[in-house]
Amino acid sequence: MDEVSTSLKAPPGRRAVRAAQYLRMSTEHQTYSIDNQREAIREYAEIMGYEIVATYEDAGRSGLNLGGRPGLQRLLADVEGGRADFETVVVYDVSRWGRFQNVDESAVYEYRCQMAGVRIEFCAEQFANDGSIGSDVLKAIKRSMAAEQSRMLSQKVFIGQARLIRMGFRQGSKAGFGLRRLLIDQHGRPKGILSSYEYKSLQTDRIILVLGPPDEIATVRWIFGHFVKTRKTELEMARLLNKRGVLSDLGRPWTRESVHSVLTNENYIGNSVWNKHSTRLKSHQVRNPPEQWVRVENVMEPIVDRKLFSRAQALLKTIYRHLTNDEMLAALKALLARRGALSIRIIDAAPDCPPAQRYMWRFGTIVKAYELIGYEPTQNCRYIFVNRRLETVRLQIIRDLLAGIEKHGGAATHDMVTDLVRINEEITVSIAMGRCRVSGFGYPRWLSKADRLPLPDIFVLIRMNPGDLTPRDYLIAPAHEIAGRSELHANNGARLNTYVFPTLSPLIRLAERATVGSTAWA
Image (cartoon, rainbow, N blue to C red; front, side, top):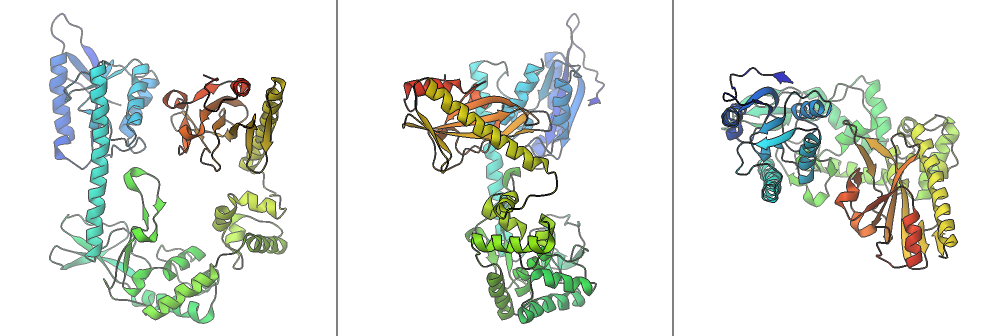
């Protein structure tokens, strides 16, 4: 927190209200410059008789999430930690507080300040943030408008980037082994080769890919030629390159993954392919389907013949052919017999065994694959053992529930195939364990595990306390209300049509009524 001296004083006979100001500017509008916000807040404070005693600032920071905003993080920490020597925080407008894509997230941070006795005021808005119905409605609209503006801007940026790709320009940082990024001006005149972590400084400049040093070009051609001719695996190719003393484009020894990235890179046949992966609006990276890729052919001089490249792709398909579960487990069991132990590193280093990631995709977890071949990991992996212990707890809770329902005259069974509890042959219930994850600010989160088939009538999440030793509570909800929510917060019971209880007794009462959709637990 930066203390700010100010000449603003309250009118004679009136106590000055101590206030902080929060300033944020991304790069989208000069109208929202830090200086402009500061001046507007100064005028507002003068009218209101406030004394600005602290400043929290996020210059050049996106408003899409909290993670990249140290100023707002310090503000929340000071307010909730009792270190705030002010009664109110003045912000220019709702969008400066944030353009959170979930408008409730914006409300949560404001609510946390209010609960600590510090109110939030927006000096440029046409409403007083006084908690009245009118101001709350306008504020909700403003939050939605701020979020929608970010979505629209993101779409415009995507369209602009796709257009540049189709014109043959480069979007992205790393060029790849055997290639370099060339900076050109608006007339196409070369300005110089960009090194790693160097970027253009003028908006009118563009970047194109060009051929790299001759020795790297020769290495790329050798990789394709030797791979097709000898049919060696990518791991064997990596070992050969390392024996020759050749480093990858990252200046590191070659790995199976780095060889694979070369063999599948269409830049080497002169094509440019973009949007294979995307991260929209600060969300997690996702792999896009091929129909969403932006591909442009013949944008640069090729290094590898197209026929050779096609042969390499066909060979890769045979290497990565679809293996059955039994074939994958047989390869894993054979590796265990040779090495005497298994780990992700050992699996990835074995040329005749699929990568560990494929086992995770196929069987859900690598531990599940271990169990299917009868292997018990020697390392004391707390995560694995906690999961096993929680599964034991879950099954015991299900047994207790069945006994409780029968004791009250109902009938209930646990189908081990679908893992659903069926009550009175009318209601299906799914019961899952929710391991607790604590955010950087101490707020608990639970994975919902609600996306399952067949969809039950009722979903129950046993939410664990931090440390996953004891249950915190039981969240009970109609399954359709919670489906699609990958993460639950502590206050989801109030925001969704869900109910939170210390025990599962409401389900026993529900069994007595035996009516689907009943809210007997309410």
